[in-house]
Length: 116
Image 1 (cartoon, rainbow, N blue to C red):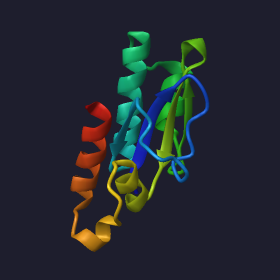
Image 2: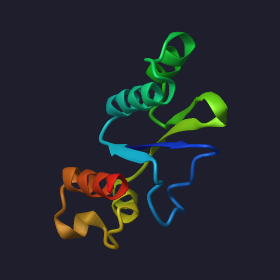
Image 3: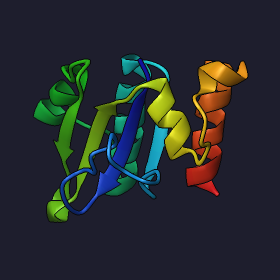
Image 4: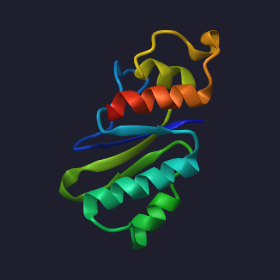
């Protein structure tokens, strides 16, 4: 199941209801990749790699997601999302299964949109 990793100054958006992808976010294919992305975002925010209890919290992130607190009230959120919702958040109106779109193409479309 894919996951969306987002950084925000408040609670993460409900991706099932969102009309667009969160601005500061990325989509990845697996929970392991999500953990790697959280570590990267944490390092960008703090200037150092996660350590101690923060590193443990990242390693222990469950499949159903969670949040990692940052300084200044910001959070990194990890949220599982269906392929269809990820495709919709990427600005594509149809279900990807009906268009013979691969999972990698869905990830690429989402990440191209938020990184543009």
